[in-house]
Length: 107
Image 1: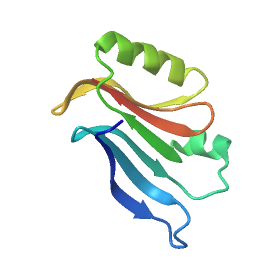
Image 2 (image 1 turned 180 degrees about the vertical axis):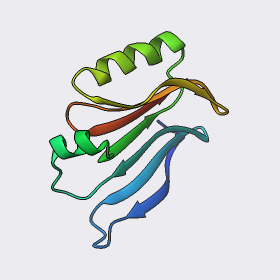
Image 3 (image 1 turned 120 degrees about the vertical axis):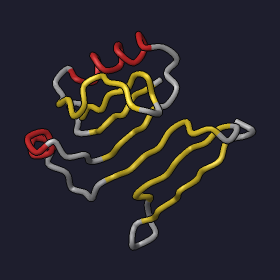
């Protein structure tokens, strides 16, 4: 990706990893990642509905694509926010998958 760049880089205290990072392509947000401290107890994360690492996937194209991703991710996972509309997205959802990874998917 010739026009890709990282933005909003927030490192951990030791400088060995990101706590938050965004990937932008042609100036548009494409993917953002945030990570919680390790080790992570996935059962506890699901019980408390906490986010460990969040992948924000923008511009999935259609509501059907978001719904398909939502259904795959919620299988064995925990729904934080069911599919809904917000001012910046006509269709989005937040789900912690069975592995403790939090996903925000949208169009």
